[in-house]
Length: 405
Image 1 (tube, helix red, strand yellow):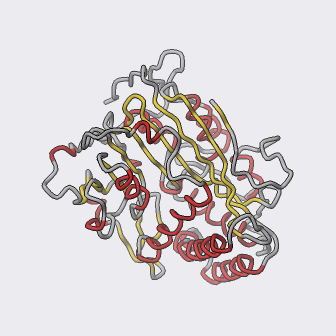
Image 2 (cartoon, helix red, strand yellow):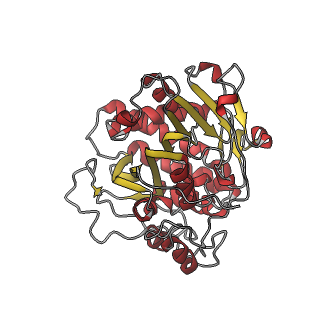
């Protein structure tokens, strides 16, 4: 197992030395807020939950913690109708979860509450290409080898939280013999524009993914922690979804903003508005996501959860530091920074219903957004967002424990 950081921008700092946990950073940034999770009454009980594992590494057997599945739902993709691109749903009520909030069409569930309109689809499309540019690759190591086949449908790829389907569409075009399945809370707006080997499903990962168990060679997850109640349980689901030798790729950010030395800013939400405003805006988003039950600590635990799970091997991780407020950063072409500023500007608008819904007044939100926009375009100080990315393969000799009733 290797942990490396090839995309760390040179600044003379060593971010790994003395790195705080995500929970420590949240305590420091929002000391006036009580951390109360959906299943834990205090930060200490949350920490205890994080230190537990779903399996016994020595036996591979179930532990007593958090593996009960109450939604047994199955979908046999081999039995679909002739139109293989039609959206399916294992819970038909999910297809209608669109509501209007602050003049935006919102994809909403018990946890998730962000837009699902044309502006957001355009932002996600551009974000996809921006991430390819900075990561210098579309796919994790080993994926091409795993998907090598000329037999139609022999290999399957699953994209959880697919958004507008940019990543899964790339896969379908680059691996035309693969069957690709895209799952999201809301349907892709025009599935007719997808490659013919892509199928879509409307679903909520929080309800369980048993209907996918044992059917896929690659599972991809990117930036969905704000809509996931228990990310460790999601990784457990993925371990069962994957066939032996299959590849898992995860990528999440930790809802913190970092200075040019890659140290997190400390934000006190109940103090008067002050710079850095982008870091303050993100602290409000973090608070809002946490209030709805999203797993704001997930990014910081990906490595721990994967390495402690007996199903996975060949585990690698990297941090990708995005200069989301570019300041005087000049590592990339000017076109990249223009795209980055456009993406952040759109994200600021997208977060309004969620942040205002958590208690911030609309007047304060508009002030915070305007000040953040000024930083975005005029500040000389760079502010970073830390993406934590991980990939792993499922052991060939690993046997999944029996499903619990």
